[in-house]
Length: 105
Image (cartoon, rainbow, N blue to C red; front, side):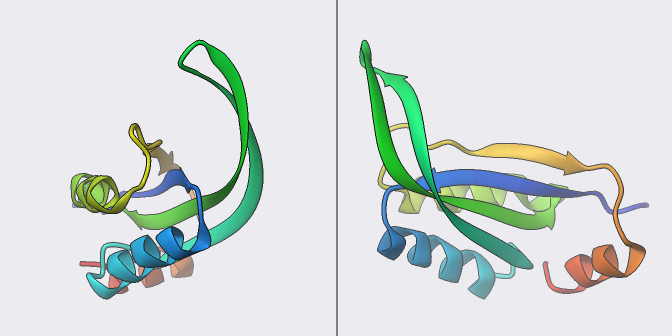
């Protein structure tokens, strides 16, 4: 059976909250790598157009771990409705995927 991989994307409001999610996912081997980037988001919320500085997390993991990752993010997240999006990795460097497999449950 071939293992499939994905990138799970979420955004959060501050670095401290991001660090808690990152540490939890890496400690539990639910992610092999998490990239962090500061971004500016514009969105509709409760009938208004809003903007906010956010931290984007791109979580590299096995697709089979998505539900566990989603559960951890939901428990630790500060937002009322957190963004949690799964994007399948359709192709990649074989050695990278092997590393991803070895570093996760």
